[in-house]
Length: 322
Image 1 (cartoon, rainbow, N blue to C red):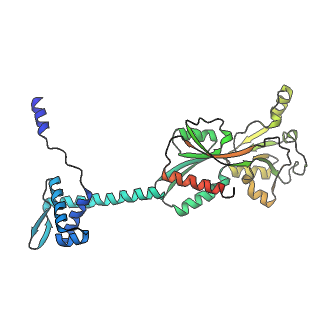
Image 2: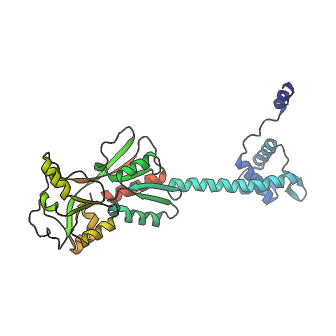
Image 3: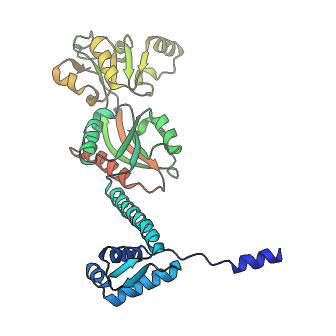
């Protein structure tokens, strides 16, 4: 053991970290075959360049150049070192570019989520903008229920999500950062030829005769909130609910059946404009239900450059007309 410790004690100290600037000086000298020409290219005095190479040779424990009448040329060891130096400097430049791209949000990746009713509000415009302006940015979008998005956020499978905050219940402010964005009133929508479409007043009892469809789990509607067991039984039997987080499927159902869609106008914007779908004349109780859109992320977690850029774009798209 004593001999081993003595051997380790005499083992040479590890080489200091290599200064890439000095390696670049050596490469320029090798290319110019002259300290004078290299110093001009590097905008250094010859004495400063000489000191830089001497310090590099001292750190490496190797002589890198031979000087002769024909100029300066690398030694055999110097050639090997310079070959490796070229690779290191190339990697260093690639690293610097990668950092610059990440700062600009031009590279890297971002995973985020949106609630099922959210795509119609901003997603096509957002992804079009990202693909056009940041083509090298990898984007992964999850369209899920609010509670599934919370699970994904806790697992850090996504960096943030945009969803109806009313669907999530009370969130612990110590765990989540919540940024409210916009409130959008909800309504009931049917096809123009629906039996209730021409009614001047539509009641909850009227709607109970038809399937109710939505993109996300909903709380009980006002006529479903009753303490009377008979009424409760009747309502539970009459209320037919279909839940689907694919907006295009919901639009197809409402155009071709007597189902009633519970949602925001943007979900059926094209159908409303074409007169294929219309809102029901329902007298809403106060307060009227709204889709309270918010951005949710983990509390205390610094956003990535790409994440901050995408969330800012979402914010801009949603609040532009506010």
